[in-house]
Image 1 (cartoon, rainbow, N blue to C red):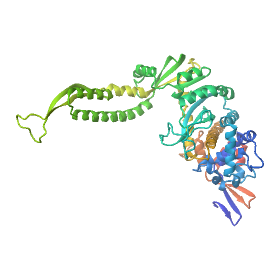
Image 2 (tube, rainbow, N blue to C red):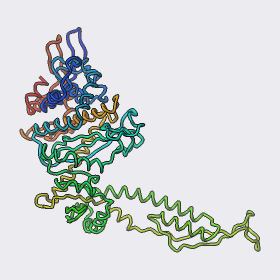
Image 3 (cartoon, helix red, strand yellow):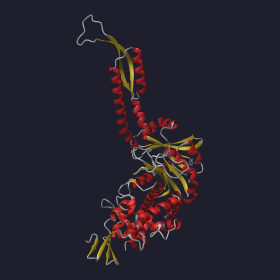
Image 4 (cartoon, rainbow, N blue to C red):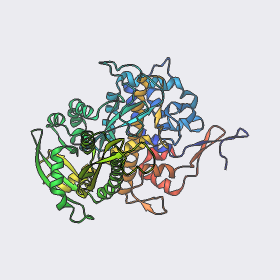
Length: 544
């Protein structure tokens, strides 16, 4: 088979792979047309429109390129550009200038506003409006210093690239934070916000409730907002009385610790069986339901982590105790002071039957003479050591249970089982962040020339996630609707393939260009053809 380039000026091959699926989904959602309507093209300066430039960056982001988005021009050298982006578009037109102008236009229009309009139209197109939405945030490392060495500017909408709490355990690197609200069924983000690297989730979530939730209720029919424990503060709950919310209760809350300590023993009668109890509660002057859940999986995790943690603490305490026992004090008062100080530090070990013994010390080596007088008398400490095993069991109970809160008091409208299921679907947002950080799709760090373009890049990244999630939803919907299946990774069949697997399955599809005028699709198998048929004409055309 011809693998690339020309053969005697007659043949040329272009790599299509799964990019036709991505291109068709972008077209199905009308992203290019909508962007071009909002960000008009400058005919004198631009050869491609802003919408086409954004489409090019999405294709790069979902292209298995292992390249950051700013390297997009290199990506299209061996791709059928006119087929993917538009008739008459060539690879050399997708250059740094075109992409930079598009990023500037995105920022100047307003990143939040532009993405919001694109997302609202997309979920309406896919019939996904109404119901449950999940809110979360994550951090992304950046290459370059940007404005990290300057103090943040008050009143500026430009994010501050700086160090902060890193979800990837890299507090030494500069970062930005991306906050998303995602639709429950598909995981499509309906709201995105780039934030400063040291931003606080509790404050950000409260600001989002204040500024955006009312509009999301109107635009996409938001009924329930699901979030992690950063949402659960008195101030945020007070501002959220006009919507139903579901949130994890922070384990540090004294009332939560009390409920877990009171009810965990009865919930954990059978370690292998999940159990739960519904508890009416009032917090922040707001009536709510608390669902206390025991999880066998959480218990298994806590057994491993707590054993390591307790062993580490115990070893440290023993080193400190042995050091105390070896220490020589000039007087008993000094010894008692050191014992008191150590006892305040001990968490697992207890000193009982403490004794302060006088010990004679001689300056000469060897055994002292029978009537020799000691040069000095020192005080040494001895004690019996004990530990309270109930502390370990109490910690296991705390880590094995968690509490979900909601202000939906009607258990018929929101049964406990449904409440738990909805909360667990918060993982869809977490999967979205893992996708954005997967080097197979996107670069985990990125670099562009300015903070403004960096903010625009976060929107491009979120658009990549939107298209990925939308494609996965459409593929699964089509297979289910027509009772069809797609090959899975172990030689079987499935009606719920991941978009990632479908992308890999489409690898090796090429466009053969003959005499620069005739084109032929190579290596398209029957399973791929059937899926394209199920997805519709737009998808068939890209691979025809």
